[in-house]
Length: 325
Image 1 (cartoon, rainbow, N blue to C red):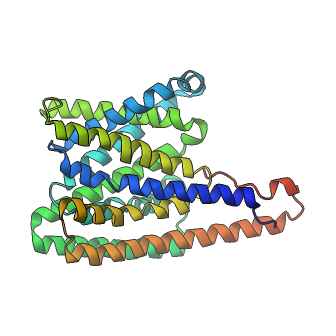
Image 2 (image 1 turned 30 degrees about the vertical axis):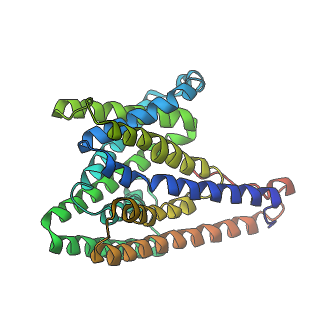
Image 3 (image 1 turned 120 degrees about the vertical axis):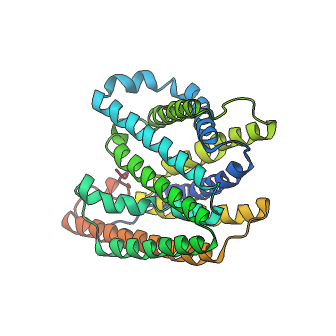
């Protein structure tokens, strides 16, 4: 098996740098939400509306090419993915009104665990033992956070449950979109899904009486930054990196958001994480990293096995990275 050449290594290093910038971008979300003086539904709706507005002018070039090739079932799946994304943001942003940034972000970033648990049922993919072990460890950490926050106040536990619900909704968003994404360009996909999420949140916000106008100037600035920085720059960085690095590696790096968000909340908001969040969060991150490393090792072994079965493949193809599904 031939090792990747300098060009491939350079592309990998560039992708890692983009991922680091993406983590820094998404880490601003929790603090910006706290700075926005508006209800959770208002914040969630405007976050997605601003993001969609920023992407739409660029997507106009790809939509005429991609839309005719889509099946009605693909359109339905993207619409459902958008609704799940809307639910994810509505629940997570609401959680920040009840619990600490540290607890909320650690719990909402457990979405890879729920993907792993649902994959055998939804996709027919078994959960390898190292991944299952990591899931169990992370769940123990989540219980530690919830138990500690309950000792502080039942209100904090409600925030933890909302954040966990946001993680489950995000997992559904990833699972639904997995079957569509390979057939749709990235820009077209995120614009349509973000647009559906924005419309869903705006309708629900208006129906519930949440204000969509008349907000303070500082809140408008925070909402615009939410759409531009963590949503467009942060999430787009992760999606871009998926074309150059494994999905497992990318998912593992997203765990850095919990660290970045907690640090930024301390620097900007003066919020110190409770001891239960620090202890339980450490266990959650350890479990997630264990699951990611276990899956990475299994995939590396599978690649070596495939390379051993086909040692005589064309040399010019040996250094190419297969895009993740």
